Image 1: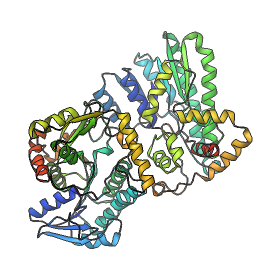
Image 2: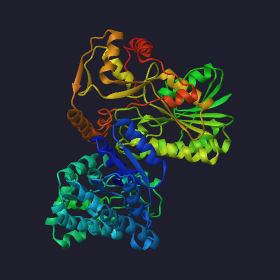
Image 3: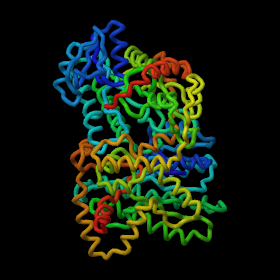
Image 4: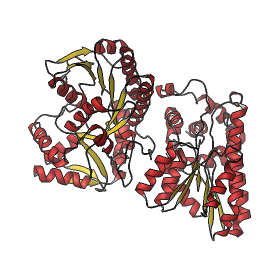
Length: 292
Length: 334
């Protein structure tokens, strides 16, 4: 079962799982994208695909998903908590409504869905939970306050839960990708970054095989991409004071410098995405520059 | 009838403008260089100097036109400054659409690419299938953005249709250094021709005559706000070269090259361009576009427009004849 499956990273996950002959339950907001994806997967792979159209931001959304699945007598043995809302904006620019929605989806929905399906997962011999975090859970970046914090929650939650559920043979993995081209806005933003940050940006279809491989190998934390791993390494070796300077410097670099940026609206808007992963372009760029 | 064709010095626009003129239409063409050797020659063709990035020149050329074919675009794999794709393919399209809406044009056809739909898996892709890979090519991305603007204008009241061409081949002017035609030409000349290491990758090839015909059909019957794939047969690289070999009898040697080597070559191209200040024809990223399936279904166009596909082997005959007659002339690279 994949939440937030209709576009971006969720879509790529769905296709990758179908490629591995897994039957799918796709949960996403109502809309035509989910149907065209299902149609596409069924035409290309011999797997069953079930659709559940639900808004997980709503209080009853998660419960309704669970009820629908149990009513159909379907067993879930791989749960992928992917649905989430990304954002890149100063704290004062976001509305209370938006933050509420972001926290509800990124934190609450993941928690509730996992809790609801826990019994079902335990019943199976081996079950897997993949929670989609972000490299933003390791860095405290400006413009990523709430988003980063929700991803830090996912990180702690997953690592802790992993210890608890080991005896039940439920394997919990947290995926922490760097910048990804998950939607048009991010694709354009990533194209406007510096060359080194562009190099670190991955396409969802490049990340998903790493994610599913790691999940099935029961890895605890997955950081896809060599460059991203390198940044993580830098982060552990660099002293805090230097990192502060880097982050401050990187912020200035956020300003897009080619005309693709015109397509992005001038004011910072919050675009909900099924998986908005922070491109940590700022740090990456400056960190590398520091080394050179 | 007066019709505006942009991009008439390009491969598709050139053929389209000539066909429309031969059918008795008055064809206005907007060209950057009125001395270009690629300008289609016909008494019904009226040349206007201008540029789709310059709004006022579009208005002059569009004066009195009831229909518009917008085929003009920057078509290349790579540009060191991707902004130019945006300026020409996105903003340029917006300019042409804007003028068309103002002039109350009856119908607008936008020539796009199947690259927007992207790579396929086992089955051919159709117009509604989700894109399964990211946009590695700035060209494809710019066409995707342009399509969004076309849809936007169709909602504003301009009857606009998108047609998506797959890989085009057949007699016509050579404006693009890496084209299906140039590959066929190289192969029939008996030169060493490289092909992807895995000859089973599938691509879709559309014959230029079918594509031109599809454009005209879309103008007649296409529904505003809709997109139609105008493709041809989907063939593996092995089938593609085998068909050419059997028709031309060429002794050309195929050299299968693994992806990694072509990628290195791509990097080298980019580095070389940085050093020499020359535009590279392709980059490491465009390699990805060769090593994948790109199979498309033209069913929607066949059912709704009455589009038809010339069998590949049949279309190859005039193509090879044309390329043979061209053998001694080096293709012009713009």
